[in-house]
Image (cartoon, rainbow, N blue to C red; front, top):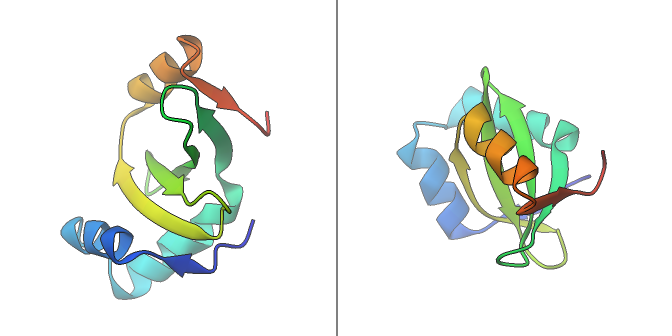
Length: 92
């Protein structure tokens, strides 16, 4: 999956977490390995990306060409959303 663009909001979120420069390039490089999911509550499509030893949630635009927002999470939250049926993983 090649993501062509980030929204201003996504860039602001990454900057909030101190992700700039080389770390930003590393974060971008991790995206293709992300697990694609659909959130059945919101309808959003996103990725779970494991980067710097923790999962990150990356929410995509409807056409999957833009990162809308991103944030770090923990394995427990990912496990709970998967196990509870809120997230359906599309590539697993």
